[in-house]
Length: 239
Image (tube, rainbow, N blue to C red; front, side, top):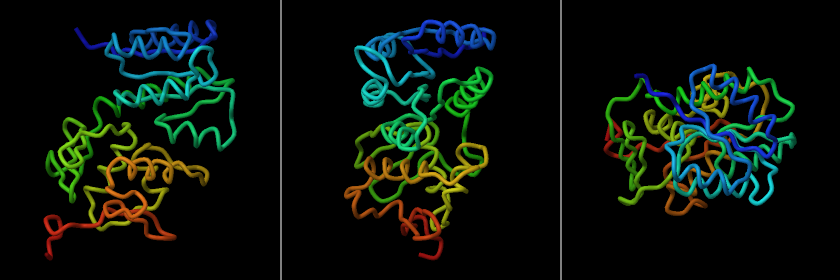
């Protein structure tokens, strides 16, 4: 029997929960429902959740607080669902661990397409350029098969987007990627407008893997161009 991904829908609006459940069940997914952030945490602990659609404004515990707590233990994709549409709201949601941001009112078919894309990457994405299962950069070990990142032999939790960005840069040491190129490679779609999405993700990765995020030695900024991973002696073929 084929595995059915489990999607957790967390929203205090029952009509939205039921609508999404109808669409997602038609796609073959199993559905869990919650109406508060605390319910989201409880369900994530009990079930093997593959993706969470998380409303921002809820009683008891809001989506921001819930997302932060979820990211302390889990790496499944999180799509924030909210009526707040400003750029700062989106940046804040992404900075605390969300992988995507959909504003209300929304097109259910578009949201389902985003859910399917995130699940596909979460379960099956393996970069075609991968040459080995473990990439070692200074004090950081990146395990591409198990999607684990170790810093000085201690595991740190990266979101799926953060992990894919780190792998992309680490597999091409010395190559400078613009924000647009990173977005196209990781999100698999063109970046239609200039935004701070990549900058926010890079900052969060640095906070997790750099010994001193204020003086990064792994992910380096090439001002006016983009980002790169600095080759180490083990990676540099001319060393």
